[in-house]
Length: 208
Ligand SMILES: *[C@@H]1O[C@H](CO)[C@@H](O)[C@H](O)[C@H]1NC(C)=O
Ligand SMILES: *[C@@H]1O[C@H](CO)[C@@H](O)[C@H](O)[C@H]1NC(C)=O
Ligand SMILES: *[C@@H]1O[C@H](CO)[C@@H](O)[C@H](O)[C@H]1NC(C)=O
Image 1 (cartoon, rainbow, N blue to C red):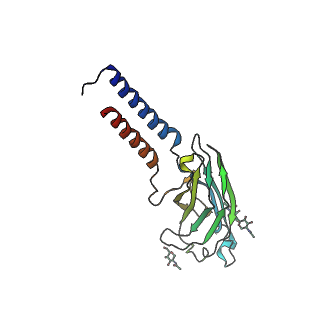
Image 2: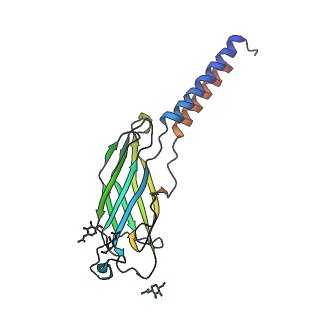
C-alpha cells in the first residue's frame, strides 16, 4: 500500500495526538504519593540531663512534628486515617506508641503539620549508657486523588530511622524524610494502557 500525502498527514496527526496524550498523562494526571517528614522528635525518658528519666516514672511521652505534604501540582489528596507507629529500636519489631490522624482532604501543594504527643510504653528499660538510640517510625495509610482516574485509594507505607541523642531529641537539625518500605501498587499503569489503546487504534487506522 503506497502512502499519499493525505495518508502521511493522518499518520503525523495521530502521532502528535498520542504524544500529547502521553505527555498530559505523565505530567498532569499521574499523581505522586504524599511525602512525610519528621521535623521534630523528643522523648524526655531518653534525655540524660533530665533526672526523672533515670527513674521508673520517666516521662515516656513522645513529642513529634510530622509534616504531610501533597506535592502534586493539580490534584488534591484524600487521606484515609494515617497511622504513625513508633518502634524503639531498629532491631526490634514491637510498637511502643501509635498515633492516628483522622482521615482528611489536602489541596494540591499544601502541607499539614501534625504537632502532637503520644504516650509510649516500654522505652524506659532502655540501656541508658548508650550514646544514642535509633527509633523506627512507620507511616501507614491509603491515599486517593481528585483525578477521576485515581479515586481508588492506594496504599502508602513509608519508614524512617530516627537517631535520638542523649538530649532525647533527634540528633540532626534537618527534617527526616520517610521512604517507601515495600513495593508500591504500580502507578501510571492506566496511562500506559490508554497510550497502548490509542497506539493500537492508530495502527489499525493506518493499515486499513
Ligand atoms: C532535658 O532535660 C533537662 C533537665 O530537665 C531540660 O533542662 C532540657 O530542656 C531537656 N532537653 C530538652 C531537649 O527538652
Ligand atoms: C511529658 O513529655 C511531654 C512531651 O515532651 C510533655 O508534653 C509533657 O508535658 C510531659 N509530662 C510531664 C508530666 O512532664
Ligand atoms: C549497657 O551498655 C553498656 C555498653 O554497651 C554495657 O557495658 C552494659 O553491660 C549494658 N548494660 C545493660 C544492663 O545491658
